Image (cartoon, one colour):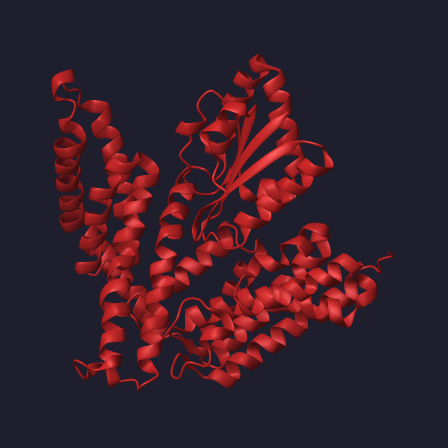
Length: 456
Protein backbone atom coordinates (compact mmCIF):
# COMPACT_ATOMS: atom_id res chain seq x y z
CA UNK A 1 0.00 0.00 0.00
CA UNK A 2 1.43 3.36 -1.07
CA UNK A 3 -0.07 6.45 0.50
CA UNK A 4 0.33 10.18 -0.05
CA UNK A 5 -0.49 12.95 2.41
CA UNK A 6 -0.74 16.74 2.50
CA UNK A 7 -0.59 18.76 5.74
CA UNK A 8 -1.30 22.47 6.19
CA UNK A 9 -2.18 24.64 9.19
CA UNK A 10 -3.18 28.35 9.13
CA UNK A 11 0.20 29.71 10.25
CA UNK A 12 2.28 27.05 8.49
CA UNK A 13 4.78 27.03 11.35
CA UNK A 14 4.24 24.16 13.78
CA UNK A 15 1.06 22.11 13.25
CA UNK A 16 1.91 21.52 9.58
CA UNK A 17 5.17 19.77 10.41
CA UNK A 18 3.94 18.05 13.56
CA UNK A 19 1.11 16.48 11.55
CA UNK A 20 3.55 15.38 8.84
CA UNK A 21 5.90 13.82 11.40
CA UNK A 22 3.03 12.03 13.16
CA UNK A 23 1.84 10.51 9.87
CA UNK A 24 5.37 9.40 8.93
CA UNK A 25 5.99 7.80 12.32
CA UNK A 26 2.64 5.99 12.28
CA UNK A 27 3.19 4.75 8.73
CA UNK A 28 6.63 3.41 9.70
CA UNK A 29 5.14 1.50 12.62
CA UNK A 30 2.42 0.08 10.36
CA UNK A 31 4.91 -0.79 7.59
CA UNK A 32 3.14 1.50 5.11
CA UNK A 33 4.93 3.54 2.43
CA UNK A 34 3.92 7.22 2.72
CA UNK A 35 5.08 10.56 1.30
CA UNK A 36 3.94 13.74 3.01
CA UNK A 37 3.79 17.11 1.24
CA UNK A 38 3.79 20.09 3.60
CA UNK A 39 2.23 23.49 2.86
CA UNK A 40 4.09 25.66 5.36
CA UNK A 41 4.91 29.30 5.77
CA UNK A 42 7.86 28.94 3.36
CA UNK A 43 5.75 27.27 0.67
CA UNK A 44 5.28 23.69 -0.54
CA UNK A 45 7.98 21.25 0.54
CA UNK A 46 8.51 17.59 -0.39
CA UNK A 47 6.15 18.14 -3.32
CA UNK A 48 4.25 15.11 -4.63
CA UNK A 49 5.01 14.31 -8.29
CA UNK A 50 2.65 13.08 -11.02
CA UNK A 51 4.49 9.75 -11.04
CA UNK A 52 3.90 9.30 -7.31
CA UNK A 53 0.22 10.09 -7.74
CA UNK A 54 -0.07 7.39 -10.42
CA UNK A 55 1.61 4.84 -8.16
CA UNK A 56 -0.34 5.74 -5.02
CA UNK A 57 -3.47 4.05 -3.70
CA UNK A 58 -4.86 6.84 -1.52
CA UNK A 59 -4.14 10.34 -0.22
CA UNK A 60 -4.67 11.81 3.25
CA UNK A 61 -5.35 15.56 3.38
CA UNK A 62 -4.87 16.83 6.94
CA UNK A 63 -5.41 20.56 6.58
CA UNK A 64 -7.15 23.54 8.13
CA UNK A 65 -6.68 25.65 4.99
CA UNK A 66 -7.83 25.27 1.39
CA UNK A 67 -5.94 22.55 -0.51
CA UNK A 68 -6.29 22.08 -4.27
CA UNK A 69 -7.38 18.44 -4.69
CA UNK A 70 -7.70 18.42 -8.48
CA UNK A 71 -4.35 16.68 -9.00
CA UNK A 72 -5.53 13.79 -6.80
CA UNK A 73 -8.57 12.98 -8.95
CA UNK A 74 -9.09 9.23 -9.15
CA UNK A 75 -7.43 8.54 -5.82
CA UNK A 76 -9.18 7.59 -2.62
CA UNK A 77 -9.15 10.75 -0.49
CA UNK A 78 -9.38 10.84 3.29
CA UNK A 79 -9.78 14.31 4.79
CA UNK A 80 -9.20 15.56 8.30
CA UNK A 81 -7.65 18.40 10.27
CA UNK A 82 -4.03 18.74 11.34
CA UNK A 83 -5.19 17.91 14.87
CA UNK A 84 -6.62 14.63 13.54
CA UNK A 85 -3.22 13.78 12.07
CA UNK A 86 -1.37 14.69 15.27
CA UNK A 87 -3.72 12.86 17.65
CA UNK A 88 -4.92 9.97 15.49
CA UNK A 89 -2.51 9.47 12.60
CA UNK A 90 -2.91 5.68 12.69
CA UNK A 91 -6.66 6.09 12.43
CA UNK A 92 -6.34 8.21 9.27
CA UNK A 93 -3.94 5.71 7.69
CA UNK A 94 -6.20 2.78 8.58
CA UNK A 95 -9.19 4.62 7.11
CA UNK A 96 -7.28 5.28 3.86
CA UNK A 97 -6.30 1.62 3.58
CA UNK A 98 -9.81 0.42 4.42
CA UNK A 99 -11.49 2.74 1.92
CA UNK A 100 -9.07 1.79 -0.82
CA UNK A 101 -9.83 -1.88 -0.22
CA UNK A 102 -13.57 -1.29 -0.31
CA UNK A 103 -14.63 1.26 -2.91
CA UNK A 104 -18.32 1.01 -2.14
CA UNK A 105 -17.61 1.79 1.49
CA UNK A 106 -15.45 4.67 0.29
CA UNK A 107 -18.40 6.38 -1.43
CA UNK A 108 -20.52 6.05 1.69
CA UNK A 109 -17.74 7.34 3.97
CA UNK A 110 -16.90 10.31 1.77
CA UNK A 111 -20.48 11.58 2.11
CA UNK A 112 -20.26 11.11 5.88
CA UNK A 113 -16.93 12.95 5.98
CA UNK A 114 -18.40 15.85 4.00
CA UNK A 115 -21.36 16.05 6.37
CA UNK A 116 -19.05 16.00 9.38
CA UNK A 117 -16.89 18.72 7.88
CA UNK A 118 -19.95 20.93 7.40
CA UNK A 119 -21.08 20.26 10.96
CA UNK A 120 -17.63 20.98 12.38
CA UNK A 121 -15.31 23.80 11.43
CA UNK A 122 -14.50 23.17 7.80
CA UNK A 123 -16.93 25.78 6.47
CA UNK A 124 -16.55 29.40 7.58
CA UNK A 125 -13.69 28.48 9.92
CA UNK A 126 -11.61 27.00 7.10
CA UNK A 127 -12.27 30.04 4.90
CA UNK A 128 -11.33 32.41 7.72
CA UNK A 129 -8.14 30.49 8.52
CA UNK A 130 -7.12 30.48 4.85
CA UNK A 131 -7.36 34.27 4.85
CA UNK A 132 -5.51 34.54 8.15
CA UNK A 133 -2.72 32.22 6.96
CA UNK A 134 -1.99 34.46 3.96
CA UNK A 135 -2.32 37.63 6.05
CA UNK A 136 0.05 36.69 8.90
CA UNK A 137 3.35 37.13 6.97
CA UNK A 138 2.28 40.67 5.98
CA UNK A 139 1.38 41.45 9.59
CA UNK A 140 4.61 40.07 11.01
CA UNK A 141 6.89 41.71 8.43
CA UNK A 142 5.06 45.03 8.67
CA UNK A 143 4.97 45.01 12.47
CA UNK A 144 8.67 44.31 12.86
CA UNK A 145 9.60 46.98 10.29
CA UNK A 146 7.46 49.51 12.15
CA UNK A 147 9.14 48.49 15.40
CA UNK A 148 12.55 48.97 13.79
CA UNK A 149 11.53 52.48 12.77
CA UNK A 150 10.58 53.13 16.42
CA UNK A 151 14.13 52.13 17.41
CA UNK A 152 15.30 55.51 16.06
CA UNK A 153 12.74 57.30 18.22
CA UNK A 154 8.96 57.32 18.44
CA UNK A 155 8.64 60.32 16.09
CA UNK A 156 11.72 59.62 13.94
CA UNK A 157 9.56 58.36 11.04
CA UNK A 158 8.08 61.83 10.65
CA UNK A 159 11.35 63.02 9.05
CA UNK A 160 10.62 62.35 5.38
CA UNK A 161 13.47 60.71 3.46
CA UNK A 162 15.15 59.28 6.56
CA UNK A 163 15.74 55.56 7.18
CA UNK A 164 13.06 55.32 9.91
CA UNK A 165 10.62 57.05 7.53
CA UNK A 166 11.43 54.43 4.87
CA UNK A 167 11.03 51.56 7.35
CA UNK A 168 7.67 52.93 8.46
CA UNK A 169 6.56 53.40 4.84
CA UNK A 170 7.47 49.80 3.98
CA UNK A 171 5.99 48.33 7.14
CA UNK A 172 2.97 50.52 7.83
CA UNK A 173 2.33 52.22 4.50
CA UNK A 174 2.70 49.04 2.44
CA UNK A 175 2.67 45.75 4.39
CA UNK A 176 -0.03 46.86 6.84
CA UNK A 177 -1.97 48.54 4.03
CA UNK A 178 -2.15 45.16 2.27
CA UNK A 179 -3.15 43.25 5.40
CA UNK A 180 -6.93 43.63 5.16
CA UNK A 181 -7.16 43.25 1.35
CA UNK A 182 -5.09 40.04 1.59
CA UNK A 183 -7.32 38.73 4.40
CA UNK A 184 -10.50 39.48 2.43
CA UNK A 185 -9.13 38.26 -0.86
CA UNK A 186 -8.05 34.86 0.41
CA UNK A 187 -11.21 34.30 2.44
CA UNK A 188 -13.04 34.79 -0.85
CA UNK A 189 -10.48 32.58 -2.63
CA UNK A 190 -11.14 29.78 -0.14
CA UNK A 191 -14.88 29.99 -0.82
CA UNK A 192 -14.94 30.45 -4.59
CA UNK A 193 -11.38 29.83 -5.83
CA UNK A 194 -9.50 32.32 -8.04
CA UNK A 195 -12.54 34.38 -9.15
CA UNK A 196 -13.00 35.45 -5.52
CA UNK A 197 -9.66 37.25 -5.31
CA UNK A 198 -10.73 40.36 -7.24
CA UNK A 199 -13.93 41.28 -5.36
CA UNK A 200 -12.38 40.09 -2.10
CA UNK A 201 -9.34 42.33 -2.34
CA UNK A 202 -11.38 45.27 -3.60
CA UNK A 203 -13.83 44.83 -0.73
CA UNK A 204 -10.94 44.61 1.73
CA UNK A 205 -9.31 47.75 0.35
CA UNK A 206 -12.59 49.65 0.60
CA UNK A 207 -13.04 48.45 4.18
CA UNK A 208 -9.60 49.76 5.10
CA UNK A 209 -10.21 53.12 3.38
CA UNK A 210 -13.57 53.84 5.03
CA UNK A 211 -12.44 52.79 8.51
CA UNK A 212 -14.29 49.46 8.69
CA UNK A 213 -10.96 47.80 9.41
CA UNK A 214 -10.51 44.16 10.32
CA UNK A 215 -14.21 43.49 10.85
CA UNK A 216 -15.13 45.05 7.51
CA UNK A 217 -12.43 42.98 5.83
CA UNK A 218 -13.86 39.75 7.25
CA UNK A 219 -17.34 40.65 6.03
CA UNK A 220 -16.02 41.70 2.61
CA UNK A 221 -14.20 38.38 2.17
CA UNK A 222 -17.28 36.28 2.86
CA UNK A 223 -19.49 38.59 0.78
CA UNK A 224 -17.14 38.33 -2.17
CA UNK A 225 -16.77 34.56 -1.97
CA UNK A 226 -20.46 33.78 -1.77
CA UNK A 227 -21.32 36.44 -4.38
CA UNK A 228 -19.08 34.60 -6.85
CA UNK A 229 -20.70 31.28 -5.93
CA UNK A 230 -24.17 32.70 -6.62
CA UNK A 231 -23.16 34.45 -9.85
CA UNK A 232 -21.64 31.23 -11.21
CA UNK A 233 -24.85 29.43 -10.34
CA UNK A 234 -27.19 32.02 -11.81
CA UNK A 235 -25.36 33.20 -14.94
CA UNK A 236 -25.14 30.73 -17.81
CA UNK A 237 -23.51 31.94 -21.04
CA UNK A 238 -23.36 30.18 -24.41
CA UNK A 239 -20.26 28.03 -24.86
CA UNK A 240 -18.81 30.51 -27.33
CA UNK A 241 -18.90 33.23 -24.66
CA UNK A 242 -17.86 31.20 -21.58
CA UNK A 243 -14.35 32.66 -21.81
CA UNK A 244 -15.82 36.02 -20.76
CA UNK A 245 -16.92 34.69 -17.35
CA UNK A 246 -13.54 34.70 -15.53
CA UNK A 247 -12.10 37.83 -17.17
CA UNK A 248 -15.12 40.13 -17.49
CA UNK A 249 -18.49 38.98 -16.13
CA UNK A 250 -17.50 37.61 -12.71
CA UNK A 251 -14.88 40.23 -11.73
CA UNK A 252 -17.03 43.15 -12.94
CA UNK A 253 -20.35 42.13 -11.40
CA UNK A 254 -18.89 40.78 -8.15
CA UNK A 255 -16.71 43.85 -7.60
CA UNK A 256 -19.68 46.13 -8.26
CA UNK A 257 -21.97 44.22 -5.87
CA UNK A 258 -19.41 43.84 -3.08
CA UNK A 259 -18.14 47.41 -3.45
CA UNK A 260 -21.61 48.94 -3.24
CA UNK A 261 -22.55 46.77 -0.27
CA UNK A 262 -19.37 47.72 1.61
CA UNK A 263 -19.80 51.45 0.89
CA UNK A 264 -23.55 51.82 1.47
CA UNK A 265 -24.57 48.92 3.75
CA UNK A 266 -21.73 47.25 5.65
CA UNK A 267 -19.06 49.91 5.87
CA UNK A 268 -20.60 52.46 8.24
CA UNK A 269 -21.84 49.98 10.90
CA UNK A 270 -18.53 48.08 10.76
CA UNK A 271 -16.57 51.35 11.08
CA UNK A 272 -18.71 52.34 14.07
CA UNK A 273 -18.10 48.99 15.76
CA UNK A 274 -14.39 49.25 14.95
CA UNK A 275 -14.13 52.74 16.46
CA UNK A 276 -16.16 51.70 19.50
CA UNK A 277 -13.89 48.73 20.10
CA UNK A 278 -10.79 50.94 19.88
CA UNK A 279 -12.30 53.47 22.29
CA UNK A 280 -13.33 50.71 24.69
CA UNK A 281 -9.82 49.24 24.71
CA UNK A 282 -8.27 52.67 25.25
CA UNK A 283 -10.58 53.45 28.17
CA UNK A 284 -10.54 50.08 29.92
CA UNK A 285 -10.50 50.41 33.69
CA UNK A 286 -7.91 48.40 35.61
CA UNK A 287 -10.31 45.65 36.71
CA UNK A 288 -11.79 45.21 33.24
CA UNK A 289 -8.34 45.19 31.65
CA UNK A 290 -7.14 42.46 34.01
CA UNK A 291 -10.26 40.40 33.28
CA UNK A 292 -9.70 40.80 29.52
CA UNK A 293 -6.07 39.72 29.89
CA UNK A 294 -7.13 36.70 31.89
CA UNK A 295 -9.68 35.64 29.25
CA UNK A 296 -7.18 36.13 26.42
CA UNK A 297 -4.67 34.01 28.33
CA UNK A 298 -7.19 31.21 28.79
CA UNK A 299 -8.02 31.32 25.07
CA UNK A 300 -4.38 31.19 23.97
CA UNK A 301 -3.68 28.08 26.06
CA UNK A 302 -7.00 26.28 25.61
CA UNK A 303 -6.25 24.63 22.26
CA UNK A 304 -2.69 25.88 21.55
CA UNK A 305 -3.00 26.93 17.92
CA UNK A 306 -6.57 25.76 17.35
CA UNK A 307 -9.67 27.86 16.61
CA UNK A 308 -9.93 29.47 20.05
CA UNK A 309 -6.23 30.36 20.09
CA UNK A 310 -6.46 31.79 16.57
CA UNK A 311 -9.52 33.85 17.49
CA UNK A 312 -7.57 35.49 20.34
CA UNK A 313 -4.57 36.06 18.07
CA UNK A 314 -6.73 37.58 15.31
CA UNK A 315 -8.26 39.92 17.89
CA UNK A 316 -4.78 40.99 18.98
CA UNK A 317 -3.68 41.59 15.39
CA UNK A 318 -6.77 43.69 14.70
CA UNK A 319 -5.82 46.06 17.53
CA UNK A 320 -2.46 46.95 15.94
CA UNK A 321 -3.78 47.27 12.39
CA UNK A 322 -3.22 51.03 12.54
CA UNK A 323 0.44 50.53 13.39
CA UNK A 324 0.04 51.43 17.07
CA UNK A 325 1.19 49.63 20.21
CA UNK A 326 -1.48 47.42 21.76
CA UNK A 327 -2.03 46.07 25.26
CA UNK A 328 -4.18 43.28 23.79
CA UNK A 329 -1.39 42.14 21.48
CA UNK A 330 1.03 42.19 24.40
CA UNK A 331 -1.26 39.93 26.44
CA UNK A 332 -1.85 37.58 23.50
CA UNK A 333 1.81 37.06 22.63
CA UNK A 334 2.94 36.67 26.24
CA UNK A 335 0.13 34.23 27.01
CA UNK A 336 0.96 32.28 23.85
CA UNK A 337 4.60 31.92 24.88
CA UNK A 338 3.77 30.74 28.40
CA UNK A 339 2.52 27.13 27.76
CA UNK A 340 5.67 25.73 26.08
CA UNK A 341 7.90 27.73 28.43
CA UNK A 342 6.06 26.38 31.46
CA UNK A 343 6.19 22.80 30.18
CA UNK A 344 9.90 23.13 29.40
CA UNK A 345 10.61 24.39 32.92
CA UNK A 346 8.49 21.57 34.40
CA UNK A 347 10.62 18.93 32.62
CA UNK A 348 13.69 20.44 34.32
CA UNK A 349 12.04 20.81 37.75
CA UNK A 350 10.32 17.43 38.02
CA UNK A 351 12.32 14.98 35.93
CA UNK A 352 10.63 11.98 37.57
CA UNK A 353 7.29 13.09 36.09
CA UNK A 354 8.53 12.75 32.52
CA UNK A 355 10.13 10.04 30.39
CA UNK A 356 13.56 10.55 28.86
CA UNK A 357 11.95 11.36 25.50
CA UNK A 358 9.63 13.92 27.12
CA UNK A 359 12.56 15.59 28.88
CA UNK A 360 14.31 15.95 25.54
CA UNK A 361 11.11 17.33 24.02
CA UNK A 362 11.00 19.80 26.92
CA UNK A 363 14.19 21.43 25.64
CA UNK A 364 12.56 21.91 22.23
CA UNK A 365 9.47 23.31 23.95
CA UNK A 366 11.60 26.02 25.58
CA UNK A 367 12.93 27.08 22.17
CA UNK A 368 9.44 27.09 20.68
CA UNK A 369 8.17 29.05 23.66
CA UNK A 370 10.63 31.91 23.32
CA UNK A 371 9.72 31.98 19.61
CA UNK A 372 5.97 32.39 20.34
CA UNK A 373 5.01 28.97 18.98
CA UNK A 374 2.36 27.80 21.44
CA UNK A 375 2.08 24.46 19.65
CA UNK A 376 5.28 23.34 21.38
CA UNK A 377 3.14 22.27 24.35
CA UNK A 378 0.77 20.09 22.31
CA UNK A 379 2.60 16.72 22.69
CA UNK A 380 2.53 17.07 26.47
CA UNK A 381 -1.12 18.13 26.49
CA UNK A 382 -2.08 15.23 24.22
CA UNK A 383 -0.29 12.74 26.47
CA UNK A 384 -1.98 13.91 29.70
CA UNK A 385 -4.76 16.40 28.84
CA UNK A 386 -6.67 16.37 32.14
CA UNK A 387 -3.64 17.48 34.13
CA UNK A 388 -1.61 19.46 31.60
CA UNK A 389 -4.22 21.60 29.81
CA UNK A 390 -5.67 23.19 33.00
CA UNK A 391 -2.10 23.90 34.15
CA UNK A 392 -1.29 25.59 30.85
CA UNK A 393 -4.47 27.66 30.97
CA UNK A 394 -3.78 28.78 34.54
CA UNK A 395 -0.27 29.98 33.70
CA UNK A 396 -1.37 31.81 30.55
CA UNK A 397 -4.29 33.43 32.38
CA UNK A 398 -1.88 34.77 35.01
CA UNK A 399 0.46 36.08 32.31
CA UNK A 400 -2.33 37.79 30.37
CA UNK A 401 -3.78 39.39 33.50
CA UNK A 402 -0.36 40.64 34.66
CA UNK A 403 0.51 42.26 31.32
CA UNK A 404 -2.77 44.18 31.51
CA UNK A 405 -2.18 45.08 35.17
CA UNK A 406 1.26 46.45 34.29
CA UNK A 407 -0.17 48.30 31.24
CA UNK A 408 2.36 46.69 28.89
CA UNK A 409 1.95 47.48 25.18
CA UNK A 410 3.42 45.74 22.13
CA UNK A 411 3.96 47.18 18.65
CA UNK A 412 4.67 43.89 16.84
CA UNK A 413 2.37 40.89 16.29
CA UNK A 414 4.92 38.06 16.39
CA UNK A 415 8.55 37.18 16.98
CA UNK A 416 8.68 36.17 20.63
CA UNK A 417 11.70 37.34 22.62
CA UNK A 418 13.59 38.15 19.43
CA UNK A 419 11.65 41.40 18.95
CA UNK A 420 11.81 42.48 22.60
CA UNK A 421 15.31 44.06 22.37
CA UNK A 422 14.10 46.45 19.63
CA UNK A 423 13.88 49.89 21.28
CA UNK A 424 10.28 51.07 21.72
CA UNK A 425 8.82 47.79 20.45
CA UNK A 426 7.53 47.14 23.98
CA UNK A 427 6.21 49.67 26.44
CA UNK A 428 7.16 48.18 29.81
CA UNK A 429 9.80 45.60 28.86
CA UNK A 430 10.78 44.52 32.38
CA UNK A 431 7.17 44.01 33.61
CA UNK A 432 6.51 42.11 30.37
CA UNK A 433 9.35 39.66 31.04
CA UNK A 434 8.26 39.34 34.68
CA UNK A 435 4.68 38.56 33.60
CA UNK A 436 5.83 35.75 31.32
CA UNK A 437 8.22 34.37 33.93
CA UNK A 438 5.52 34.27 36.63
CA UNK A 439 2.98 32.63 34.30
CA UNK A 440 5.50 30.03 33.13
CA UNK A 441 6.40 29.22 36.74
CA UNK A 442 2.71 28.83 37.63
CA UNK A 443 2.33 26.30 34.80
CA UNK A 444 5.55 24.50 35.73
CA UNK A 445 4.63 24.22 39.42
CA UNK A 446 1.13 22.97 38.66
CA UNK A 447 2.38 20.37 36.17
CA UNK A 448 5.15 19.26 38.53
CA UNK A 449 2.63 18.94 41.38
CA UNK A 450 -0.32 17.16 39.79
CA UNK A 451 1.36 14.90 37.19
CA UNK A 452 2.03 11.34 38.26
CA UNK A 453 5.63 10.03 38.30
CA UNK A 454 6.77 8.17 35.19
CA UNK A 455 8.90 5.04 35.01
CA UNK A 456 11.36 4.58 32.17
